[in-house]
Image (cartoon, rainbow, N blue to C red; front, top):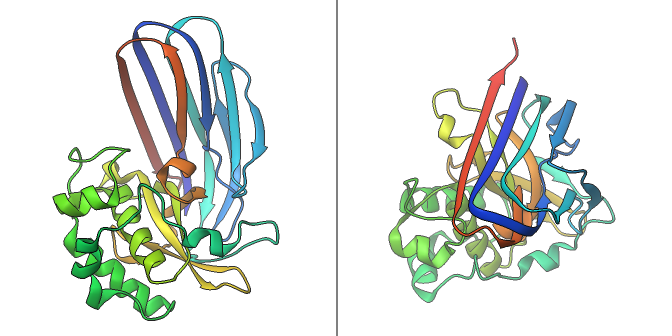
Length: 265
């Protein structure tokens, strides 16, 4: 598919923000299944760019003059095709590092007991997909009941969440089973479900020695395909978040985000 994407994030504050640092992972990589035709990220002031430890292109900008609103916009065109296998470069983070749990992925004993019969005995696509189907069936997709700080344990207790929660639950269970797994942030093209445009899924390592990863969408219980556009990878949402930052001042914050994905025919 040939897709045109526009992602706009706007912040408004009750009182002036005196100082802030923003960190963006809004640039999709050239990788299996996606070819970037053009892409640009617009920020209020010039950002510095570098690659983080996971190989994501990271943009950082610091604002030291007071402001009460801020706009960040990413837009471009991408050609996609079905792809679910990804091979790391030699400089990539070791898969063994991605066996470690984080605060967002740590499973409870109740979670482990509940999913015990679904936990994969090996790192094959078939066995991990079965676990994905069990997570999808257990955690109902309900926007608005969780947020970016919700943990896998909290989502499991609610038995509801969104794609981010599905990914965190799945990461916790894969890692407990001895399978390295990483969080993937990105976009999902579905004309009938625009609320899914901002999306998250996981990669699991099927060959540690060769650095081979398979990409699975838990929300749809399927392998990643041409509908998925990758932005960044990390240990969990926090390390792969498209936009995050810290600020001094500003009082209350109002955030509005919009993503449009259109197929170019």
